[in-house]
Length: 254
Image (cartoon, rainbow, N blue to C red):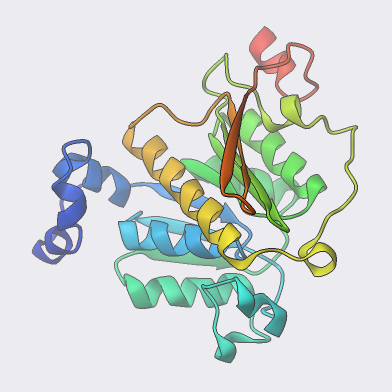
């Protein structure tokens, strides 16, 4: 995919990198990324992917911007209060980079619609805060062999990993967080969240997505990174695929 002179100038700092260059930037232009959730994590994810030149972004969120979101959800501003989050974030991306084709899905993705959205994407980013939704996204990614970049943040604690069903050794989300072990719901509205924390994790999610699209590795597949922002201490847990996993076990057994 060729680029215009304006695009070559816009992305010149990427093109200067040996790992990206003209070919890598053209690969980003041809890519399609699905971002589910346009809130705290989805804000930096969306802005960085759009600014970096991912050619097509699909943003899905059923929720509306609330005043309490503005403490951390940097894709939205005061004027967006009451507006759908996916639409608000799409407008911000278009203002930063009008070359990006941005689609806002103003709905909760599930069932056949989630399945179709995942199948159409090259990489999927889970920026939600709901366990059932995370499990549904993961199952769709396993069905369609799409790499999933998942992040989470609450209070001062956060985590991030990549689940890549294209790699037989990589676990899926359900291998690490079994669907039948429903955790106690921890929502920002009840527990609170340190504002920069979602920026840190969301930026890392964007970086992992770009690396997957560009073939720059290794990714975080098989590694769960956890951050305690009180002392800015990182820890890493090696995670493996579970042969008996109810989601990906049968796929890799075939």
